[in-house]
Amino acid sequence: MGMLELRKVTKRFGGLVAVKDFHMTVEEGELVGLIGPNGAGKTTLFNMCACFYPPSSGEILFQGHAIAGLKPYHAAGLGISRTFQVTRPFLDDNVLKNVMVGAFCHAGDVREARKIAWQALETVEFSDRAHITASELTVAERKRLELARALATQPKLVLVDEVMAGLNPREKNRVLDILRHIRDTGHTLIVVEHDARAIMSLCERIVVIHRGEKLVEGSPQHVAHDPQAIAAYLGEDYAAA
Image (cartoon, rainbow, N blue to C red; front, side, top):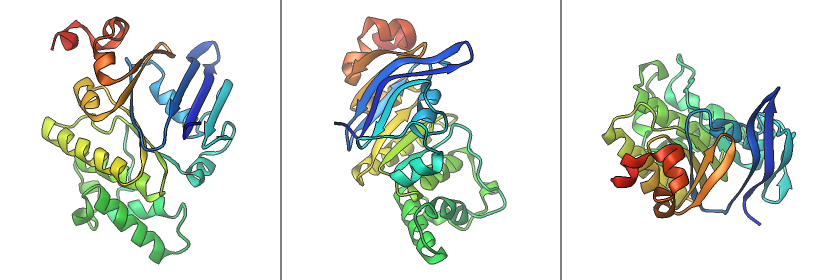
């Protein structure tokens, strides 16, 4: 039994089927990539795993327990955290206070929340910016703040949604190193990312979703040479490279 199991998960929005009969198992300590074209259903899957949406049918199990129908704060309490594509920090507060908000998921008082927040900032190599007001941060810095806030909830599983979007190559490489470090500190990660080369270098296993259904799953090498993955998402130029 894996840490996270999705069993024939389907999500409908009226007549639109966003995810259909999707199945996936993620083991503790894995770093899994989830890729696919825009509108494929990646963020919808994350929203269901984090209990923002209930599935229309199917089962989602976290550490053996069904979580469909729980609230997002229940999922956070169990150890599921996520980042968002569009960062929305509290702009008038400093970085530390922003991260402390996540820490109160488990912290009993301000002192404990501050300690947890500092640890999260150190993990993402951002403690030197702790007292900077969030409105002063660059795009890359807001992405690291988003990661720190997720880690401050003390999760077991982190769902990372396009944390490298809008970053230059140097910034992306730093985020890749940080994500590896997060995994090495005992977390399990599922990463959604459109930069195929980045996610192929980061993850041990890749899952390709297309039109809401799982298309291909395997090692980066396997997926990179799979005809279905190439046709649906990667493209011939990537395969040739």
